[in-house]
Length: 492
Image (cartoon, rainbow, N blue to C red; front, side, top):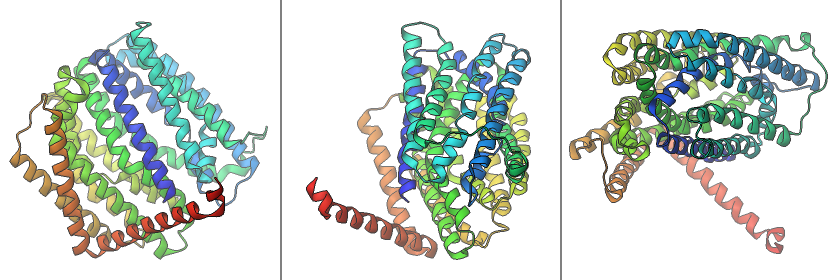
């Protein structure tokens, strides 16, 4: 759980930095600039999916590692990263033609440089994760983000380079993060390249990469469709609303699941312990998602107006229609379940099913505007939820009924809070006083907390989770007291 705390703090910090970056740069640049960035990152992000080749996961997951194996995986990452950067540069003119914007060529050329930089730090990050050194692993990425944001702001306000600031920002962040990962991990590769000794890892990584590729396509398909149909300005409006939504959504899922993968991988032999950890993760993510979903749906107009300003009204609509997805978002947990049992086939099937559904929804919705695309995202997510649950848990000892006994009551409570709030208060895109905003947010949070407490009294699985959570908090408090009372602490 210490890892969960560190990861949660880091994810909150990452979310704050991402939103701060959006807030500051959105007031300095135009929607078309962000649309250009979204077009370019659709291409480079797709190519960059192949960089890791899923080779970091075996480093975290395998019970025994050797210098030869990790060195081989490192060089595979680097060689792949360089090759993919060259492919990205070669496809830049094609991307410009697809989106009918010549600026996309230079944007893709520049962003492609970040691919080999990320590849060079993949194994170092995996080694830090494997050894559960959460603080240096998280700090490396956060520090890179901070420096990159500062440089981007200077680039816009002092150097006046416009959208180029958005393009150099991820390159600087990746370079600094990779350098720090090398420093903190202390590991250095040997001049060893033994493909024969890493065949099983490569096979596993290839299957995992296939899932990530399909999953990325489904995540970026809305950007592709909106950019192709409507152009840079509507895509800029859509992408800002989506990016803020995605940053907040990730805050609830990835801190838990980042710690969950090594934990589940090591405890599969103990079914009771495995199920307990998995169900705790499901409950934690569902409770956090429920609270965030209530806040974001009820306060979406005011949040986007406050963060981005009056010229981003359409982004507020996009954000509002995307926000319900958070209530049923557990894909990060399910992805961890598939990965922990080495089930790349199940991952791939799940990704393909989801992608086909989203592709159909987006193509139907895009002629009706960017708000319709966002609404389609939430509707398809609702229908895909039980399918993903079935695929993830059908081969687990944890039954689907136990999963739903945790998530469905929380979902029902969230919908009740949202219904009551929307009946009591009229919301519109525009300013409200800080006191009103805080009062409404507090009312939602307190109501949700009381209802969640009631649920933990009524439903056995939630009652068990509450007991374990309180026990862990008591243990943490007692251990801190012991450290403070120890002779070493008193001398300090």
